[in-house]
Image (cartoon, rainbow over all chains, first blue to last red):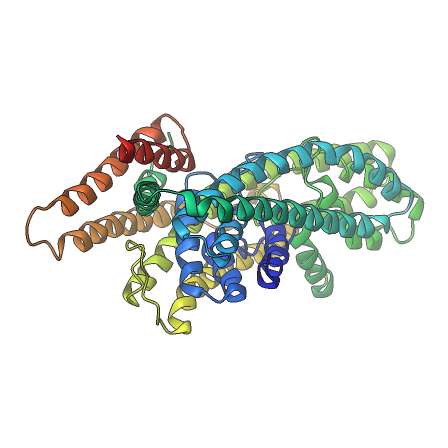
Length: 201
Length: 273
């Protein structure tokens, strides 16, 4: 685990807050977040590619109502962190997508359990209205911490696993993963056409 | 509402979704956003504040950008509640307040989801992709050019960021301003904009750009075509297969990411056969 990968995890945890909890200025969308994170690792072109692929692969899921799409930030962070550790992008992107799906499950669990904690804060707010500022600050801090822990652990585990596995991976598996990676923009673009349909289904 | 108060609510609205939960959704965020306004309205009647806050801590869920329409309308109605002269009037105003909160949050969520997540986000993505292609950053290739100027690399993402936020922040600011001064007849300012026409036009542009992008990709694969070799056929089959299958998976409501993960598995099996 290099310092730049550690910094990338910190930045990813911060950017992930933009997805739901703070700002929502689209810093967390793939093409922005991946480019920003690539500035830390130094490979901007890899960041752009991962960003585009991340946006396209998750283009069909929107945060409507209570739907929780997989995190583009986590996907980009895991992909770029593993790439910075020397793993090919077509392998690291696979772990990025898997990480984003797992993160959304963990996030769902956190949202379900947060209510118990909020009951306490609701009582505090009714008693002392200024407690709402503390509740918001604490919610942001805990979300950041949880994001960081989850991203860091996932990157650490996948990084160790892939660095150990890499010498044993046959050339055929490289080809297979490369082909699947090459198909990502096509999968995404083919989804965008019906996404812009003019009549509601 | 004074400019300073509007600015305060506007800045706080960026934290509407902090504390999002499956039981009461954005209740904490709504209370946080409205707090300075409530403190000002009830500055002479501090004892009323706890019961007022309990109303704000009930369920609330809407699209975060369009939520500003709710803030303005709720602020105006809260003034009416605070100025109620009798208990009957007070109850009447509180009921109106609750119906505004419920009704407006559903309407704004519907418009916001369709406009911002359904049209503007993919549209700005396509805009960025076209800019990158114009700057010779061809994302259809796995190997991207290594020596691309830094400005070229970041400008498309930057353009998408500014295009999305220019519209989002405008709607957010204007929504707060308009809804505070509007009434029920104008649906609290929502009728000021022709949302359906905007969404329709955005989607029309989007579909042209998306089809254009697919055609460009096909052109990119065919432009160096000399003869039908194994390499060409493999690429063509992969492209056609995924374009076809993603239409089917969309009908079956299977997300793209599972199609990609399945592709990794299938290609590995095919390579070993």
